[in-house]
Length: 88
Image (cartoon, rainbow, N blue to C red; front, top):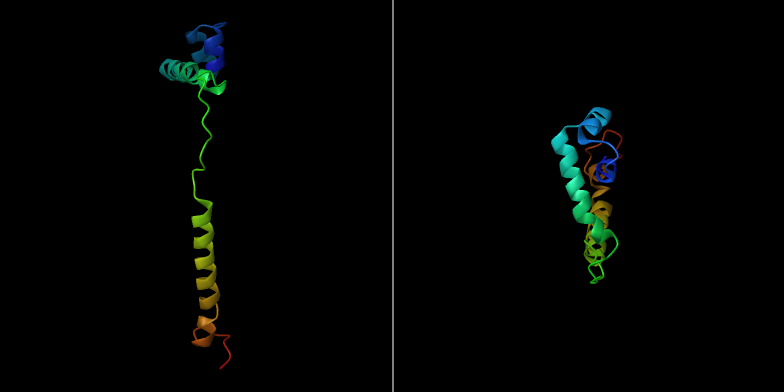
């Protein structure tokens, strides 16, 4: 949607009819595309390595904790006689 607006082959009025979108929305998307396009090609000269958004080590610790809790609690209902099929 923003690409045709940037290309300028059609007027904004034609684009609103073609895509059934409000004129303000097309203008907003066009502005966002123009602002972000330079970053796509790294024209700022500073390409810092992206840090992971999550800490994998912390997640592995949490998975281990949850696995232990699940293993511990998996036999509790049967041992307590809470399940109808539990053997006593």
